[in-house]
Length: 266
Image (tube, rainbow, N blue to C red; front, side, top):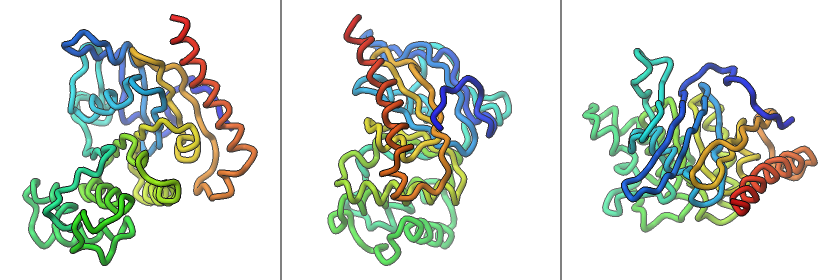
């Protein structure tokens, strides 16, 4: 069942955004008055047209940028200001071309100054988790696009984050690789219980993956709809062809279309 959200996430608030606005020095207002609560262990998808501020919102959550107005609070932290451990998966894998898969995954742990033995053990385990056991010595040039993205995800997970931010990570992949990675990501999320905030342009991908879909209106970005996808996990391939999946996609598409119609009327 797909519902409009009117309350805070039942799993407990991990992050609260209040009146978040982002204005760049050029004068462009990317986001305006964004109010959003993200719960613990949730899978939240940010959906919207190009330029609506989805990636900007991820960067503000990650600390790679600061809001021009408004606040981002982490209720579980003392004073609500300290971010939990988080990782960011970008649109491109951004791997070091001269480093093996193992060394790419190990990089965050090396920067953190962990013991060498623990670094290698955790990096190997992370690669195994994403289905790349046996590829530890492979270089990025020797890997397919989907495999490189798996290395990028392993590098993000090796730090054991509480929140995983993903900015259209599968957009450049073929449909088969994208479908497999969707399923593998859901399995990892269910197993490890972190929070995911996932940016996508795809209604179909968001409905398959997410518990909640936050639809952003065109620039300046703001929350136009906040919808629950109340379907059980794991979500099997049969779900993709079911009538209920089609119904969810229609509802989300209508919400997205309404933001575009409102923009064209301005």
